[in-house]
Image (cartoon, rainbow, N blue to C red; front, side, top):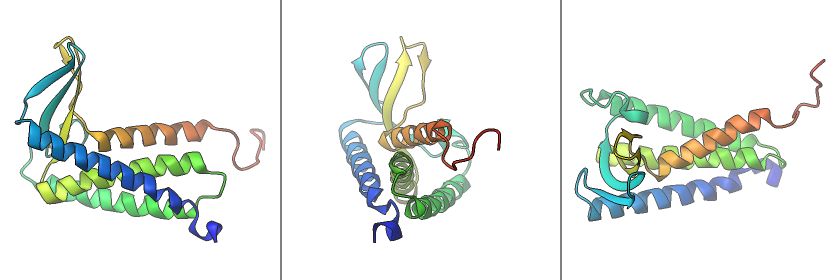
Length: 167
């Protein structure tokens, strides 16, 4: 029975990411005004409220709205692929299952924002002594990033096929 469903049991992690992501976004929207900044570690880390109508690093944010549907379609497509991938994983592929579940949860968290609000809510601001700012991000973005790094690291893990480098 477990082999039939692969690693779909890890979908609980995706749900946890979505719940944490949405709860924090709702709290920041209720507590902060747009672009209000509250230093957590002065000169390095702050909370803020920002809206992103684009993709990562505000890519295509300055366009007239068509990008909302493009990014939504991409998120839906990627999410379907990730669920199928999770279902096909073998029992020993837990690391990969966690990575996929994180990416899936993050993609769905931001998809909800995009579809319901028309923009993604960001609130984490990392900067260097008010001179350099990394674009604001959220829990969903963090989950996607951690999951993507785990996927990349998984590529370098041991030999999965049983073949040697000389085969």
